[in-house]
Every structure is written in C-alpha cells, then in structure tokens.
Length: 237
Image (cartoon, rainbow, N blue to C red; front, side):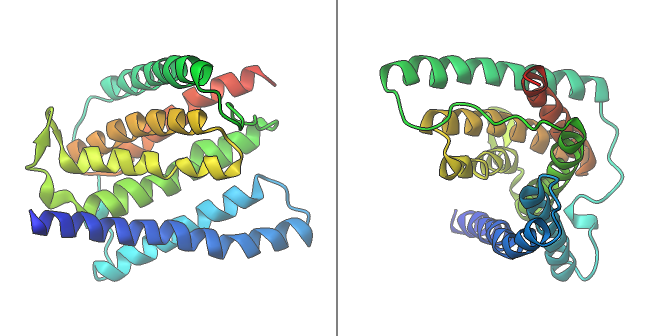
C-alpha cells in the first residue's frame, strides 16, 4: 500500500509540476506575442498548451532514455473504433445532462453562487478547431494519458467496478486540471459541472489508453468530446 501511494504521489508531482511550470513559462511568451506582435489566435491558451506539450515530451524522453514507447507512443492494439465513438458521445452527452440538472439546476437554485455558469464562446470556428479540438486535445492527452497514466501502469491489477486504478485516477486527474476555471470567474457549480464532465471523459480516454496500450485512441476520445462540447457554442454564433 505504501508503494502504491508513493507511485501515485510521484506521478501527480511530476505531471502537475509540468502543468504549473507550463503556465509560468507560457505567460510572458503569450504577453509578447499579443502586445508586441498583435497575434490573437486564442494566444494565451495556445502558447500554454504548446509549452505543456513540449515539456511533457522532454520529461518523457529524459525518464526513458530518449524513448517515448513506454508512454503510449506506439501503434495501438486492435480495438472497436465504432464502440469508442458512440461510447464517447453517449458518456459526454449524459454527463452534460446529469451535471446540468444537478449542479446548474438543483444546487444553483437552492444555493446560488457568484460567477459565470457558462463558457464564453470562441467566435472563430477555425480557432476552435485548431486550438481546442486539436492542440488542447493533443497536449492534454500527452500529459494525462501519456505521462501521468504511464507512471501508474503497474497498478492495473487494482480494480474498482471493472475499471483499473490507473484509469480512474487518470480520469479524475484530468478533471482536476479543469477546475482552474473557477479562478477565471466561473461559479463554483459550473466548476463542479466541468470537473464531472471532464472526469467522465477522462475515464473513457484512460480506459482506451490502457486497452489499446497507446495514447492515440485516447486522443481520438478527447477530440470527439471537445467536438461534442463545442456544438452548443457553435449554435450561439
């Protein structure tokens, strides 16, 4: 049990350290690009995700003698991609509906909180496709299902409701990374909703990372979830 806790702690420290360090490194770079060069392409988030991707890969290479194979950069084992698609869509839609009723409906009605209960829509479709569907999906997949989950791979024998401990923890860790929206002016209930939705998506992605022994199906899950999540925002345009 002590060894298990140490492995989990080590995985969290390294991956969360990458997340925090990337924010500090990206902030001044984004500031220069915006103020000095006038680049406005969801610049802050884009630079942050690129830096996070680069640092994650560097850490992996340093930890594994220049190889990314043990971190899921391999050809995936055979899986049912049709099932992956419909399961991702169903889980995403259900998690949105359930969390909307519970957090933004019931709890927000009885215990209203300050802050926004929605995401601000991106007005440029191309920006959404490049920065959210592709760049965010790629960088977050590499950090969570590549770096974090790979540290936990020897704990697959621990099961809860037929899901391995690495799958569950990676899903929850992915959800935790999204609670930073609270510090960007979102309400506590919206923050809980986003945590619930992203944790559900994260578990599906982590499940396929483990099942296929590759991060590429997990990346597909992430992209699909972001596409489904963008539909309401596109309808507002």
